[in-house]
Amino acid sequence: MDYPELPVNANEIDLPLPVSFWHAFKFWLKLGFISFGGPAGQISIMHQELVENRRWISERRFLHALNYCMVLPGPEAQQLATYIGWLMHRTWGGVVAGVLFILPSLFILIGLSWIYVAFGNLPLVAGLFYGIKPAVTAIVLQAAHRIGSRALKNKILWGIAAASFVAIFGLNTPFPLIVMSAALIGYLGGRYLPDFFQTGGGHAAAKRPLRPVLIDDDTPTPPHATFSWFRLSKVLFVGAVLWLLPIGWLWRQLGWEHAYTQMAWFFTKAALLTFGGAYAVLPYVYQGAVEHYGWLSPAQMMDGLALGETTPGPLIMIVAYVGFIGAYLQQLVGPEFPFLAGALGAGLVTWFTFLPSFIFILAGGPLIESTHNDLKLTAPLTAITAAVVGVILNLAIFFGYHVLWPKGIQGAFDWIVALIALAAAIALFKYKQNLIHVIAACALFGLLIRYV
Image 1 (spheres, one colour):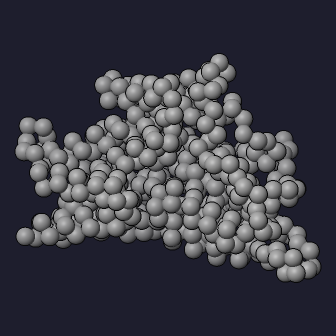
Image 2 (image 1 turned 180 degrees about the vertical axis):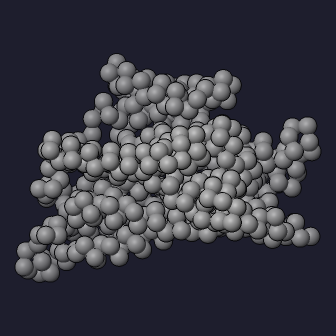
Image 3 (image 1 turned 90 degrees about the vertical axis):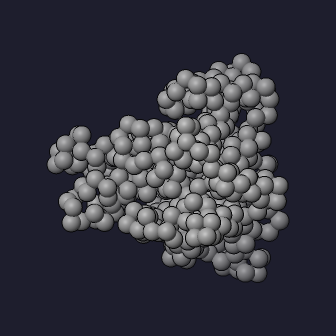
């Protein structure tokens, strides 16, 4: 039975009509195609549609779910869609909502990645990316400013951000160690200095709904969302099987050192370290995909971020681009089938990157439905978010270096690229222009420069 059950005279008391599974399916599919703007934009779209327009869930329940997703590694907007889909229509509702949130962007990125790697040397494509790359540098810098202005509320959090930047920029500390250190500091801070870590998850307090909603503040938790050890064990068992079977098959058939097997293992680790959003984990992906494995070059990594910024879905979907380019260039299924190799690589890394997100929601959702915000959970997140600011600033410097000195520090400084980056930064910071519009304008300008 669809959740929730409504009285017969629902229309008479202004309650929205019951939502069938297929009605929700159509909404989640639509969301997958319109979810531009990064997590902030995607969460804003869901809030507008689900809380205000359709009244499927109250603002308080919406924010309670969002606060849990903020604590988790992984893309919070995709996890929020999974959570609400699960709350409304059980396990399959959550699976469908989460899959449809990423599926359109996966297909789009496979197509764009193929165009890029097959035709990237054409003047048209090269000109577009000449303008997009400096815009991406400004976007990453804006991300550091946006997260920092929200997260760094006191001197201790500023100190964590500064230490994080020094660790990754000056000491080349691995990103996982930075995350674990920040989490430990946050845990201890929550116990001994709680006033410095009491941020409320970064979201305003929820207001009581003015009109009736399907899942309101007082709606009882449905039976499928109540906690039980048997249900938790079943979710963890199924999740383990869905992870072990494909990686075990890859190991047995191809060997542990094969690129597909290493992609599966590497992006599993990446999925567990994406605290603070995609910008935070990009340095880790760069360290592995570019420096350690050599699946793609620094320039190709930057181009991938540019593609990720222009497609719907979570930005962490850039992993599909990394998997496609790495498998395509290495011709992992033979020289005659490079596209097939790339498509398999993209699908493979998407599976291992997003599988943990579904397990987190389906396993942890019942616990969250019976709890409220707990400082023991939010304080580590607060510290991690502060550390992420330093990591993202390092990423902006890294991108800026490769864009402004394309041939290395000994080469010439590209003044045209610098002007494009400055113009993009002014448009984003001062005039608050739409991200997609800024990228499009810079791409057009880069095209004109290259052709002129």
